[in-house]
Structures are given as C-alpha cells and as structure tokens.
Image (cartoon, rainbow, N blue to C red; front, side, top):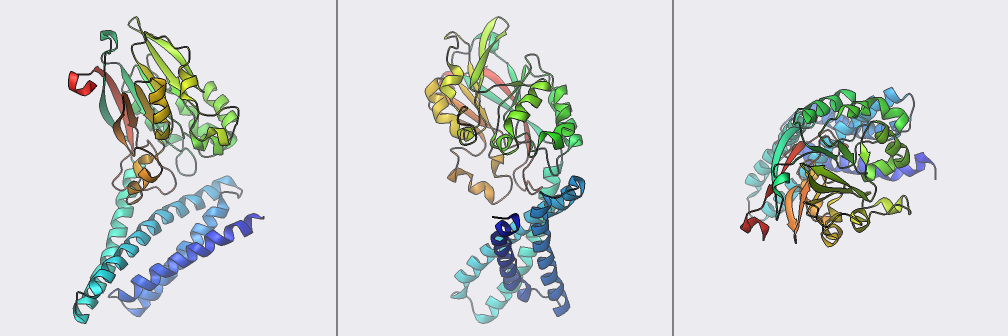
Length: 386
C-alpha cells in the first residue's frame, strides 16, 4: 500500500471531525456571516495543515518538513481541545433540551459556543507556554524499609520522555542538562523516549547529554520510541555520549561503602521489535547481592511494576505516560497503565512515574506540567513501611 493510500483514511476522518466542529459551533456564534465563513475556512486550512504535516515527516529537505510538522502539531493540539469541548458541549445541550424553554435553550447554545472557543484558545496558549518552558524540579522522598544509614539521603535525578525531534532541539536539551547538573545528584536516571527520529538527523541535538554529571554517572533504559527510531543505533550513540545503557542487567554501586543495585530493563514492548531482547526485570536483577541496601529498577513503562515487585525490587522509576500530557487525555491513561504519575505503592514496591521532561506530539501541557525529578532515599518510618 502506498503512503498516499495509507493516509486517505486518517485524512477523511480528520475532515469529518473538522466538519462536525464547524457544524456544531459556527452557526451558534454571535458573529456576522462573513466571520462564520472565515471560521469555516480556518477549519479547512487546519485540516490541510495536519495532512501536510503527516506527509512532511517523509519529505525532504528535513528543515522545511520540520517547520511544517511543528505547525501541524500545534494545530493538532488546538483541534484536539476544540473537539473535546465541542463533544462536551453537545452532551450538555442534550441534557438541557428537555429542561429549558426554547428561549433559554437558544441562549445556552450561544453561551456554550462562545465558551468552547474561549476555553480552546486559553488551553492552547497556556498549554503551549507550559510545554515550551524548562521543566521544573519536583522533589520526592522515597521511604524504603531497612535502608542502611549510608544510603540515607542518596539522590537520583530523573528525566524522561524528552522526545528530541520535530520541535525539541539542542537548545531545549542544553537547558535540561544544565538544570539536572545543578542538582548535584548522586545518580542520573534517564527512563526512555529520549528521541523521535534517526541518529543521523538528531545526533547534533542529543549531543548535550554528554555533559550530564553525577557522582555515580548517568544511566539509560530504552523506551518504545527508541525502537520506533532505530534502537541499536541509538544505544551505541548513547554509549558514545557516556550514558550507561542497561539492557535487562544491573550494576552494583558502592555508596559510602554500602552496596546499591541499579538495574534497567528494555521497554515493556521491546520483544515486539527484537525477540532477543524482551523486557525482563527478573533477568535484570539475577545475581545481584542479597545484602544490597536497596534495589532500584529503571523501566520505561509503569506496566513493568508487577514483574518488578515479583523480582524483589524496592523502587521502580518510570515515565512513558507524560501524566496524560494535557486535559482530558490524562483521564484515559489508566486504561493502559496501572499508574499515571507520581509516587505509588505495589505490595512492597514503590513506583515513581515522571510526567515527562519534554512532550510528544502537540506542544501542549495544559494542566500537566513537565518535570525533572529529584528523588531522595530516606529510611521509612514504621507506618510508611507497611
């Protein structure tokens, strides 16, 4: 099947959704007929831009296609919010149809149409600003039972899901590296989905990762997007940059004389891309010393938690979800993952999910800010250990 034929279905769906938005919103706006026509043209152009953005990912020159794709992704975020709010408005109108008089119902139609347009603009502008600013540092204490005194206060700086690619470039990565290095952490954990594209296209933009500095170094595990982008080549590139790549394996660190196990697994879906490298938390910890003060697993997807708990890990650090990235998609993450964001407990295993240090797709983080996480190991109180 040719690329053009493969794109027919999504383009038709996109056009249908844009037509639905126009049909439901434009007639109820208190504007002139000329303004309604302008709104319809704008919706048509938005559909065309999204379609050209899809084609642009396969076009050359890359610089030009990136510009088109960036504009298309921004439009995708705007239309996403517009579609959800239009659907929500229709549900409200259906419920109000039997409860209101015709006069009050017409007023509600006009008021909610204006509200949809206003909220869409607000969410898009605020979400864009949140996505493009440098991720803020979020500090989290992890209470571990029987943590040795030597490991009390051990710090891990976690970054995840930067998605270097269409709109995230070298300057963005440079700022993240500076912020992480300023934390002076004992260890840096990079939990996957660093890139969206091939090494030959993105190597100049991932180069700042070579500057990551921590007392015990920086560690990386693959995410699903590394496999979409050519995982073998990226693994070699990350090693060249000085990251320690953990592929279903572990190392034993000595911190103030106390052993600490840092393990990493390939992405939860890696077996679909490389049958020789399925994600395996049990293999990652095999042979680790039983007297280790703590066993920490880096796993891109929270779905690894059940196997990690069974394998005897104390803490799992993950990403992947982006916390849903922007409303209302954050409400649907639990349909695929056991946890959406933040700190959770599964039996004796603590699981922390970073909301993402960058973003994927639309540059929008409305209500779901990005983060650089500084995790600190502390000895659990009796209550916290239960």
